Length: 397
Ligand SMILES: Cc1ncc(COP(=O)(O)O)c(C=O)c1O
Image 1: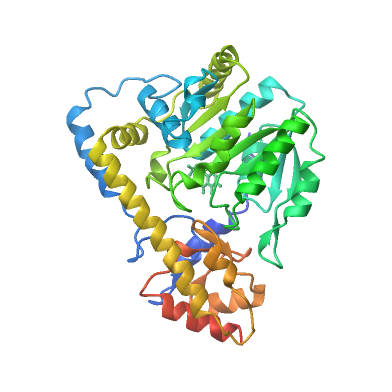
Image 2: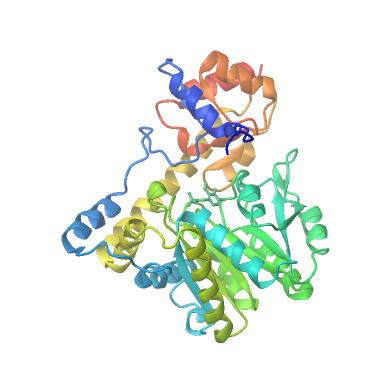
């Protein structure tokens, strides 16, 4: 049965995590793993989430099956969080969402439903992107096309080339966009760029497939939703995969949702029935725990307020680390400009150093960074910033 199987090469980020764990140096720093860390290097359970968990223990009376769409209250509250509770799309009947196992599960269900609706559609993915986009979405059988997104030299969005490429996308194809806090580059679309892509989507007839995994970690909860909310206003069809892994710190609870905006309310009902049948054919029903916590946090005014201020703290800490690292590297012996790190959004940016410099950081200084040079700014803290900048200044000599 299994004799023809070959072992799958270990994921480079997991490989890096293993090497980091095995490293005995006290001053070692992990900038590879993609989770938030506080100033003490911990990935804590948010206090608002912990409180919701305590309350849930009291009020939960059953663990019985919940159904393919998950918790209706969660679905409703997530739509309000994503689009803002005043958004006209919420009253239109043209929007429906179901709970999904994390952002990854949401992307998968979204992709499967698109394949059922229009198997000939191609999926356009920006370069670079979150490495799992291609296996996760390509695994559904899509023909994947790429469009340029980021210029590694200038550390800016490669706007002209991106727009030129999107002008070639045929009607009925999907264009994957990062809602905010682009992973891995940290370079987010400006409002003008979002508007221009919406113009093109209307003109060409392609459909935005927005992956939003970091709402609230960039400029703020509402600010980070600009593109998605504007597109919901202007376009007949939009698909949004969202994740509560980062902004609620619910990583292992696998909490996300997939949202479809359709041309008519009737289509929304049909699409959501297809999404539920897709879920049934993969994992049947989403895990309940994380979604119950999110719906409790969003639904209780005190918990909601507490969560928003905790998330703001996360956002401001990352922003502060961006500024600190950039300023500490000013005047480096290689004359490199790290200004992009200060201005980009969310947890990630490219450092842009060479692979031999990257290797020296790991071998000589115990600083672990993935080969693309993507760093997680949340891995920087007041204890390790000196070791990090001193080591970087040495390898840049
Ligand atoms: C861009 C992007 N999309 C989706 C996800 C998936 O999130 P989840 O852990 O909720 O599946 C991630 C996780 O890192 C991500 O960076």
